[in-house]
Length: 75
Image (cartoon, rainbow, N blue to C red):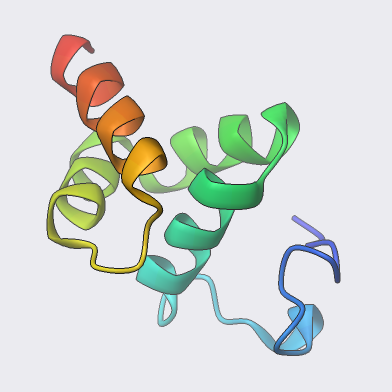
């Protein structure tokens, strides 16, 4: 996936390692991503990793965290 610069404003999106920086990518896309990016995220990382990151994240906006905890609980 080619990441948008506006999504990763603090780094060069081309240099992001999706495996090594999984938590960073997941948090950014859940907070600021569009539907296409969230769909990619779901397919690439899977529910279990997303749930783990959301539960332990201290960076997600509270509204985002609550929404995704509810979504992941029901999936």
